[in-house]
Length: 283
Ligand code: ARG
Image (cartoon, rainbow, N blue to C red; front, side, top):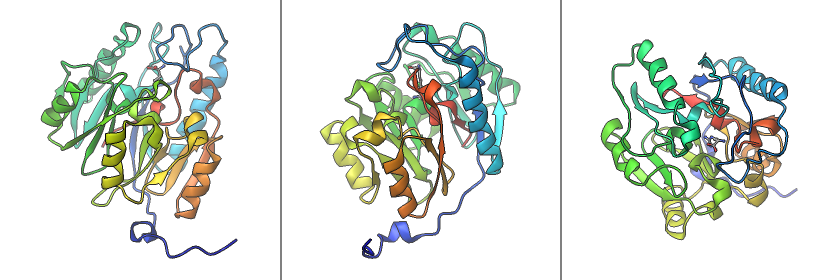
């Protein structure tokens, strides 16, 4: 192996984890009963018990890393409620709720709204535009990267900026397999000099240029990393939870000083989900 040139300045920084607060929903009623993305095939079986085990392993991983996991009660008849990331965007205590595109998921938003209200969140707004929350919004600590093309309305980006009071960067998704921003991009490090990983082919040409401009030394994933939903990762700044199969991405992250943690999320992927989809962060 050859020793490569000194890494870019942004990558030579020590990777320090920061404590996180997550909201998760056990996949007690998980199933694939309808199809609202190309991953979902209602005719092929899902093992709900195995999904529960995979979800438990994800939750235990966060707890082992010292993060706090809040659990919301799953509701019968809402098989996608396990994907808690879609139900609110929380930045500095301000909550922007969700409004789902698919009628099958619409009722999830209200369960999460109540969860926040009963916990004393005062600054909570339910959106007027279709907004699938952290599915399409990624907070870098300075910018809110916002996806549209399949789920979240482009108008919801302006609404998020107004409600949350943070600058929004709109990005266009173009590949139906990567229907949410969090299937194509995730934040590795937050703060003044944030870092991301992403799969360029999931974005329009203009959005790719925006990402190159904002994140010139980002981790660029390949088609194999994307195809196992490897971009649906969760990072605490050092430890990065990824689907088991995202080996190329894991190698890139290791080379940059991150610690990949590989988990089996096979059952959740049958619904088009991975670690991030199951993890709402309270920023
Ligand atoms: N079956 C769900 C849907 O299509 C999966 C959502 C995954 N969540 C996410 N944050 N990408 O809506």
